[in-house]
Image (cartoon, helix red, strand yellow):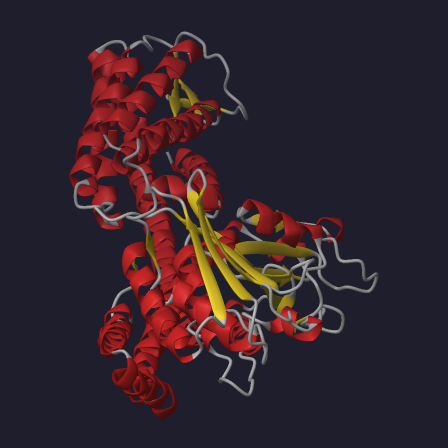
Length: 582
């Protein structure tokens, strides 16, 4: 019996070694964590059936209560039996995977034991299935609480399952006397060692999963802290300063070799290895980044060739490129670089996907805050316009002069002045207004200007007839028309023409405001609408704010475009999606 005990320890040790190797495979951990899924059950069934068959092949052959020394058992003689760890594998499969897995492994392992032969081996099919069912039912009770049995509980269940097996051996191994002699010889080492093996097996699984949970808790804490620290910078949008600070924070928490961030056309920040040639303000230089910007899909490179850096001394050998989106539009990329390709694992891929989602949400939040601020600025400007001495006194002086000559026209202008101020107040509190309301605002402004300078400006409106219910941002047309009147014609007093045209397309409306003025200098044409440009007649923020509001509401496809007309003057063109009042 002592020799059998030692040999059984070797077999149990083999199963424990396989278990240790198995639980260190990331894919197996995923199966365990999702063991309720049908696909996971089938995979667990396959894994533990293999364990059980290995147990059959490596068992200890016993003939007439004597140990027959063999290394690999394929076929047994009629009067032979096996002492093995099959019950251990079946019992653990049930405790982990439930009754479906337990009975599946039991049936398959029992069938293999029958095929091996040896005496009346057919009863192993039933005994193995019964062990699988019992252990599976116990495992199912724990699974409902999203738990595994404790190692102590598993050891007790393992011992009980082996005793069930011994009962079948006693009953079906020849006569009762023969059965009793065999059970006396093998029962103690098999019950004890299979119980200890089940204890160790469950200990390995539970401790590994607990470490996994602790590691995930630490990662979650780090990700939340990282998100909290990057949020203030993403509120500023994708700028060189904000991206540089964000890259430093991400590199600190992720321990990657380098972090790079881009917008849709240039590198905004690069921190870490390769910073000598991955320089901010350079164009997006790799095809990998261009593909991500185009497709909006995460990309992985596991070689220098795939990264696409043209610098021969570049240390970067692997990368994850994550698209950053706002309002379902790719606005930039986040790149995590590695100097050792083996450090780019599935964990890093999952982390990258999670960070991409978080940062995209933060960018959208930042855009919303910017829009809120722009709307607030618009409200402040509209309030300021009410008390702007230049605007107010010009209008009042014009009305005062008309009162002596044409009281009815003066009355109409007072109503238009009231309409203008009311439109300023109402528009500043709304995101979108009807086209009819915007046109009334423009007409009120034009009435006041044309009363001051009769016949100086001719403004023509060409608007498709079915656009009355169109919704558009407040001040859109008013800002463009006012900008043309104030800046397009200089001191020219005649033949100053402005055309406002709205053309309905399939899903959008093309808005065009063109003039026949003096045009815009090339250096200003590149900047106008993209940044504030000061002039003698204004602060230069109106077009900049309008453009940011359009991009924030509808995306970059709706930004302002400025062109020099071949015949002189300037054209402002934009498109907005068709949204109508309901």
